Amino acid sequence: MTERLRVHVDPDKCQGHARCKALAPELFELDEFGNAHEAGDGTVPPGLEDKAWLAKSNCPEIAIDVIEE
Amino acid sequence: MSDVSQPVAHPPVIDWVNDFDHTDPQWTEDPFPIWDELRAASPVVHTERFLGCYMPTTYDAVREIANDTEHFSSRRIIVRDVRPEIARNAAPPITSDPPVHKPAKQLLLPPFTPDAMKKLEPRMRAICNELIDGFIADGKVDAASRYSKYIPVRAIAHMLGIPESDSDLFINWIHMILELGIKDETKLLQAVQEMSAYFSTHIEERKTRPTDDLISYLMNAKDKEGQPLEESHVLGSLRLLLIAGIDTTWSAIGSSLWHLAKVPADRERLIAEPNLIPNAVEELLRAYSPVTMAREVVKDTAISGCPVKAGNMVLLSFPAANRDPKMFPDADKVVIDRRENRHAAFGLGIHRCVGSNLARMEMQVALEEWLKRIPDFRLDPAGTVTWSQGTVRGPRQLPFLLGKAM
Image (spheres, rainbow over the protein chains, first blue to last red):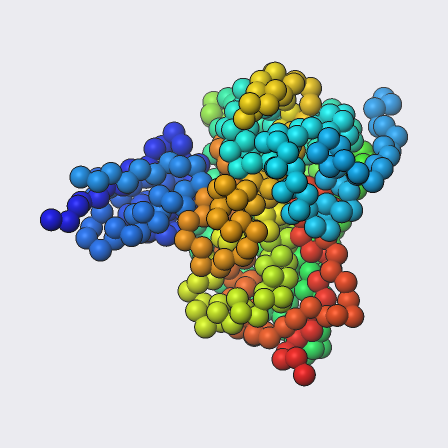
């Protein structure tokens, strides 16, 4: 069975670099100030796992968690 | 008032570790080996120059300082020979600390989101092509003074609603503030006064005829008590947007073109795979980060185990952090398909550059349009590449020959 992933943005750490939105637009949304939060409940649809890890490893503020469920 | 001090001598640096000077010609020309030497010596180094100044040399030490607003203030953000009076050139939010910082920053953020930048993109493409039209038939060009310089200046003029044809005026003020002003406070003050007078005229015009631009946006903005901003706040933020938005991106575009002129393999790959350009832009931002900020130590503390004393400035070198091999494998190589890149070119923490989305869009468009029309170019061996000094590093003369080498 393949693992299921969920992404989460820590709103206290996010500074709106918007790297996650550029790299994984399906998984993140930006508010009116350009700060990021996960789309929906953060569940990563099958096939987008690489993008989740990519977003995490490019966040300058280390604000993104990828949770393996 | 006699607070305008005499010019300070800057003898050539011999002992970089204990006497560093970011205005030394050697640093301006090729700072990378200097940063490696400083990093090997200590995570934080100190100089008696500039009335006392530290420099964090590692990514971790830079992050620690950027995230510590209790011991490190942004009230002075440029390391200079003098410490100008604080209120006189305040430019919120970049010169603000918590708790004043957040509301001032939030005012500026909505016009600079990625979606807002998408609307500007067609105008940017047109500007790039107009500039290229101006020199493509010549077979050679100074890409710094004919191309990379005018992209950001015309973009921010467009957003502010001021004439793009005033570009050279803005560039001169920035030169006075960021370069000449490090050592000559009169130049700094003169430029700040002239900019304020310029923007005051534009504010007056909009009082009777409101416009759909950033000046009117700031004039109509309300603070958290629902009151209009004081005119000094509006003027400070306008000065900030103009200064911060221009020679920074000018430098980033110039350094990117300089790299591509020297490395045909990267150029050819980006032409073959234009979808890689956004990733390459991030890597070029890491390797040639233009912007070094500063903080003032307001309370004694320790950073990466090194004691840091109040009253000193801090040269907050995001460019040096981005060359730390502990954070970035092959830190001294440009790897245009680098996958993991938490670079700090736009800063870290609450002062993340407001214009980062604009700068990224400008860089992507500038490289895309250039490579479409000028796939082959190289440094002109008859010319000299020169670099700006001090706070923002990028090529100021970038002589290229256009077309295939004979």
